[in-house]
Image 1 (cartoon, rainbow, N blue to C red):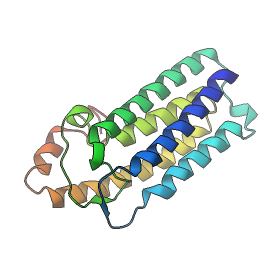
Image 2 (image 1 turned 90 degrees about the vertical axis):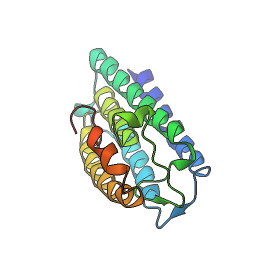
Image 3 (image 1 turned 30 degrees about the vertical axis):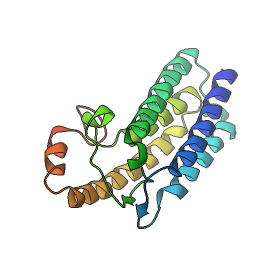
Image 4 (image 1 turned 180 degrees about the horizontal axis):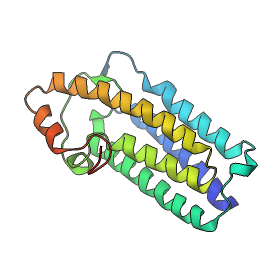
Length: 179
């Protein structure tokens, strides 16, 4: 279990560093960049969960470790796939692009915010594999991502008044077939 915990922590750190580096290649943003603080908050909270002493809440079950690792890997894969698919159209949460483009294929064909979905799934998997106290982080960040998605949806509806309502009608916000 120790190896799994270390591997998940290392992958999170690499993921967040890669995310920050990739931000440099994105199209220019218009307005404030509110998501930077959140990214580092997620990392700090995860490291607290990983290295904090919440012994009674640590996962010691190999079955939960495997389930958590699978959810973690799936979540990271979805988030990276969506980020790569967006290419230069990606931006920090709730920022607007100078020259926006509506992406409706790939992971965006079923879910309008697959990066949020992937990150939440990865955090849930981490929590199951490492320490269930992380579920509090998943719930708090889930609420924050939901709020961010609502703001982004308003921005997209304003930027694409004819295309976005149709896209929104045929896709779910964050969870395929549910939400």
